[in-house]
Length: 267
Image (cartoon, rainbow, N blue to C red; front, side, top):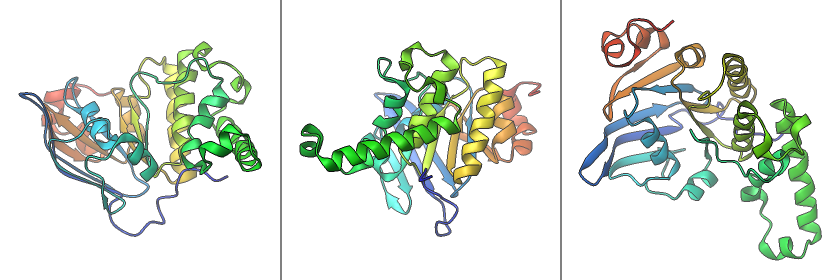
């Protein structure tokens, strides 16, 4: 199927390069001198205590917030200060801590909303239901059904999204993010509110889409079993600044991380 952009065939060099990023809210410095590089096809985690600045990082990368300083380079292009729709079109897709589905639309129609950005069909064809629009609509439906099949959501395709259990709503949100054909997928606490069974299933889904599409994923998560189990590299921030980064084992055994965040045990 024609899915998210395959990243591992890109030219050598980071897919995402962030340098000296800063965000101020009035007199409050929420993020200071934040930098990160993510390679094509990498699955990287971001952890830190509540209020450390993790969601601020994601809001800056996706364009929800405009940085007070620093730069964001994506696919070799400076995207600092771009709007969310511009970043989405460039290939950055995300989910949110608080699920943002169209509750009254069916699961299928929620997925199809992500395709319209790339469909190339203008308002005139859409309003008058011309042949080009009809063909595009058929193609979008077929592709949406493929994503639903991958995430085991086919049986719910006609269900209003707001009627689904919480765990399934999370899966729909991920499916919609994938349908935007991203080069970089930002997952903001996807396991939040899930029970252990749902969390285990979610972990499998993230591994599946990472392997199937070679998709670059940046993951914020509080569940240490998830983050330590699937991420190739983990960055830790505390009080708006980078504390350390490294392999899961290096992060797990870092005394500063244990003191600031993980506590005495991460099992």
